[in-house]
Picture 1 (tube, rainbow, N blue to C red):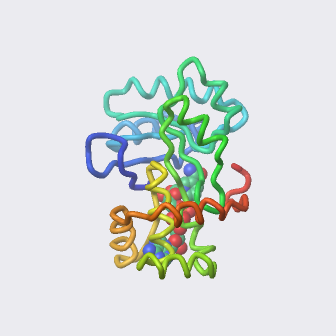
Picture 2 (picture 1 turned 45 degrees about the horizontal axis):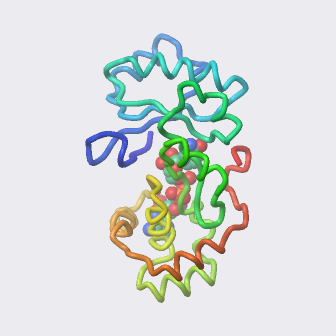
Picture 3 (picture 1 turned 180 degrees about the vertical axis):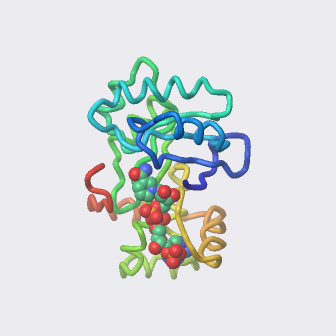
Length: 199
Ligand SMILES: NC(=O)c1ccc[n+]([C@@H]2O[C@H](COP(=O)([O-])OP(=O)(O)OC[C@H]3O[C@@H](n4cnc5c(N)ncnc54)[C@H](OP(=O)(O)O)[C@@H]3O)[C@@H](O)[C@H]2O)c1
């Protein structure tokens, strides 16, 4: 389970994609139905993205479910769903892996992007260039990555186990980045994905 903002009118929405639809047996179906989920995502395209999506469309009819979407779908996968496209695609995005072609495609199709692992799982927070820029912006490297993501219009879902990080991450929403900082972050692209199997 993950907490994500923006899936419904609620300020905080419950979002889940941690079970494969192929295993949607009776008990799982009952759990999903009663969990009060605002946005249920198909975790990955798998081998039969279209038939998996058709199951999700059936689930969307349940009044207990707010909406359904997909995760880790690339352009080819999304094209398979063009007759009844999802409104949400959760994919890994950060300045280190920007997925520009996919982002453009989603924006043209009206598919909202949820950016997972926006802090690159903490693996790039010691990048010297990032630290220098964060100091200039009077924020932390983590906040800089989140502010960049929010600036791009992505629903941004960092994870933290620490209260002070959660607080700092929430505050990052308010940071207004100068254009030159956004441009410098745009130049960080290096195809660095923490989940390369979905890239
Ligand atoms: N759809 C998918 O395939 C998929 C795949 C991966 C992840 N996700 C979702 O994406 C969300 C987050 O992804 P993630 O956990 O992979 O990575 P992430 O948010 O990029 O990074 C989490 C790491 O960053 C650290 N961190 C968080 N806030 C920080 C801060 N302010 N300063 C310094 N370090 C900070 C955390 O450590 P502390 O706990 O110490 O703060 C943790 O080690 C989750 O909701 C997850 O479910 C989805």
